[in-house]
Length: 206
Image 1: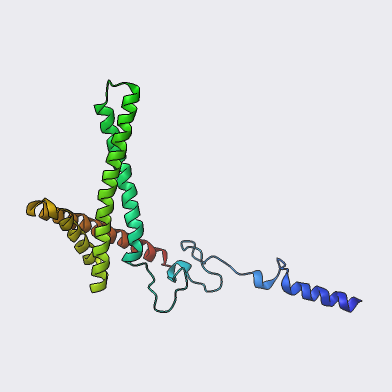
Image 2: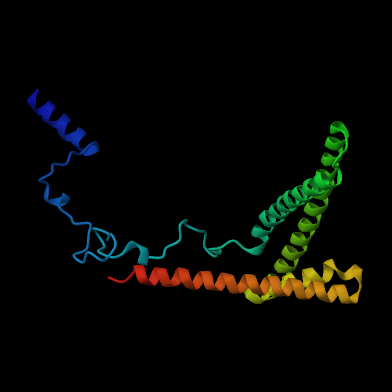
């Protein structure tokens, strides 16, 4: 009977091991001797922030980042929602200015008309621009490697095409506006990446 009880305890100990405070295997420091360094791995004795590994295991040959085609759907939908919101607020403001002194029922109907009309117009316009930009970006990405020049080229082509029916001069202005906005975004993105890299390098110093 004693042998059976001892075997049962050993078997249960495999699946639910217990650790005592005086267990030598538990006496592992999780901090570096230098108080200015961040938390270290107790087993590798390195800063875990210095190990840049992908968050998910990807299939062989798959890209670690989503391409322009994957980003396009969210960008188009977000542009429609943003344009509708901005246009709705603009319509509400204009409606409040132009319906002063009217009866309450008529004013309420007019305000709804202003909000819906302005919101739909702005949402459609911004959504079409996002669709053009995403299409040009995907096309350029198929022709050449993805980089900042694709972003600027796609924005410039979007401005040219969007204003192409308004005459040559406005078409050129649209292209310049697109190129300017894309260039500003690229510069901001690079500066942001440089700050992130600098903070990462600073955190990896022991």
